[in-house]
Length: 118
Image 1 (cartoon, rainbow, N blue to C red):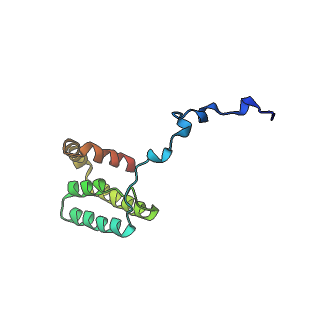
Image 2: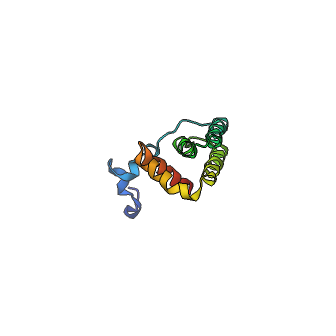
Image 3: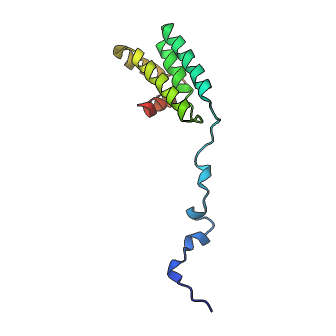
């Protein structure tokens, strides 16, 4: 009979409902891949809105299309777009604009995305 050290047995592995047997892959949602070219195109659209004087639309567009599935380059380009958009908004216009965004449909989620960038 083989000598078994009972103190080294992990009994949690024997329980089928144990967290040790839980696949952590299901915790993170899968996002569609986003290329840097798509993010640059979005950045161009946001800049066009800024040039047209629609700062709120530009901020909404940037926040609603965050590249969660993008590579590092795409995320850096999008970060630059969001920062450029925020810098173009006057400080006195920021609070009323954020209030309007919050009260609109999907507003709290957009402001959550904004907080990720800050």
